[in-house]
Image (tube, rainbow, N blue to C red; front, side, top):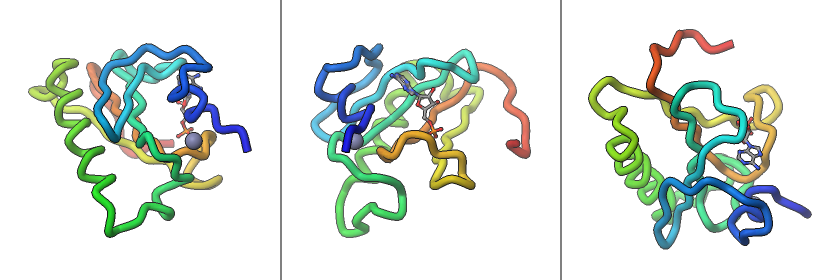
Length: 112
Ligand code: AMP
Ligand code: ZN
């Protein structure tokens, strides 16, 4: 099944890279909801957070990437938000695990 984020990882679809390591890739969201809106994904395809093997280091690598990106993008001091949408009610539209890193404006709560 075609996965748009796997296509981005293969370079078949262009993306604006902000971070990459052996396990994680991050790029600017194509339709940003904040001045900083970055998508952080594992290089290994995984549909959503329910599918993450809890004996793997994947989430550690994701958290490390988020820490580096927050500093790199200058949102570490004032704060930012990390969002994971899971399934239809969660608003997930791309079925490759991803975390939104949003910042550089005052974010409101609760989300819609
Ligand atoms: P979600 O609704 O949580 O599944 O988020 C998917 C996100 O991927 C949305 O914020 C989209 O704007 C973003 N997106 C979809 N296609 C691309 C693309 N080709 N490049 C960058 N971001 C994308
Ligand atoms: Zn994928």
